Image (cartoon, rainbow, N blue to C red):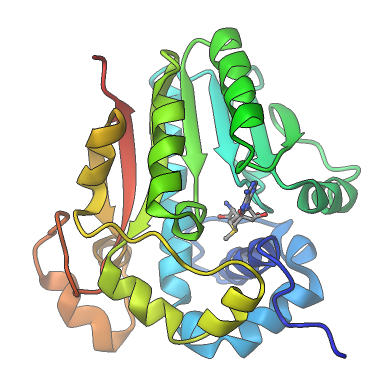
Length: 284
Ligand SMILES: C[S@@+](CC[C@H](N)C(=O)[O-])C[C@H]1O[C@@H](n2cnc3c(N)ncnc32)[C@H](O)[C@@H]1O
C-alpha cells in the first residue's frame, strides 16, 4: 500500500513551511525564511502541489506569518522575555527574526516532528536561546506541569499557537485556554481562528485526507475571538486575514473587492472569515 499524502498531523507543519519558502523566493517578500524550503522537504511540496485550492490561497498562510511576526515584534519591544510557541512545527523565527539574544524561546511540538527539525537544523545558529520540548499537548497533566514551570521561571511570556486550535475540539480549546490563563506571567497569546463558514470551505479540499490522518478541522467558534473572554483572555487586536492581505497588496483580484469592506471581527456565521488575534490575559 502506498503511503498517504498526509500521514499524521505533523505533516501539516511541512505543508505550512512550503508557503514560507515560496514567499521567501518572491522579490517583494513580506518576510524571508531561508530554512523553510529545506524543512518543508519533498513531502511538504507534494502536499502543497496536491492541495490546489489551498495553494491558490497561499496569501492567507503568508499573511498569518507576517501578522504574527508583527505582533511578536511589538510585544518584544514591550518587554516580553519568553516566547512559548505551542505546536511550533517547522517555524524558524528564532533564526530569522531580529530578536534579542537574551530572549528565551520555547518550542513545543510532538516528539517525531521535533526530532526531524533538530536534525534538519543541525549546524544552524538561532539568535536567541531556544529550548525544544517534545510533548503531546493533549497530555493535560504534563502540559500543566510545563506551563507552571515556564510561568515560574519567566517574567513576561507571550504564547504563540499558529495553526493549532483548528485541530482541537471546542472543549479542548476551552481547557487549554483556561490552563494558560492560570499563569500570572502569561501575558499575551497570539492565535488564529476561523469562522464556521471558512472551516466548511477549508474542509472541501483535503478534508478527507486530514480526517484519515487523524487531523480533522474541529474548532470554528460561532462567536469569533470573543469566545476566549470566557477563559480569561480578551482580544487586544484582531485583524482579519483578508483585510491584512488587502493592506499588504496581496489579495488576488477576485477577492480585492472584499478588501474594501469594513473590518468586522465579531460573530460571522456562515461568512468565510479568518482572523489573527493578539489576546491579553484578563487580570481578574
Ligand atoms: C499546521 S501545523 C502548524 C505549525 C506551525 N505553528 C506553523 O505555523 O508553521 C500544526 C502543528 O501542530 C502540531 N501538533 C498538533 N497536535 C499536537 C499536540 N497534541 N501536541 C503537540 N503538537 C501538536 C503538529 O505536530 C504540527 O507541527
